Image (tube, rainbow, N blue to C red; front, side):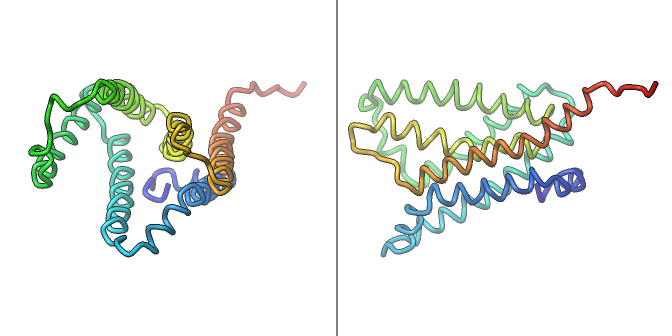
Length: 209
């Protein structure tokens, strides 16, 4: 929202959008506050905190890149643009993977069926379907509205994690439940402003008799 200078007037004058973004940010913090506190107080938390900072910087860069793609995308279709971005990301990860020595510890015969199925799901649903849909939505909807997926993703991840690891004793804390409820409320508020604007624009105005 801050980087989208073209929409400053619209976004910063919408109380629902501003309230929704702030509430959603609080909800995400509540969702992960317990793990964050454990990381801060852990004796070997240095690299985990550095990684957390790197993720925050990466999210800012992703937001900037998404806005650039929205306003400067020309020529190829959305599918082609999404394909180029995913391929570039995959190539960029290769040198880091080699530097960490991941190739030396990989054995093809050790990969389980569930791992192959997980990889297939990530490739099809997470990348081909999910990311392509994100690129397409970015062209037809406002960046603020599309960015609400960043609030919904943690909700889905936590719920699926609890569902698939139920046998391992995975449970949701009161902080996480509160965070999930707040996040969903924020997404509703952000989209409510857009729906009201569209409804007013579509409602025919009656001429005075």
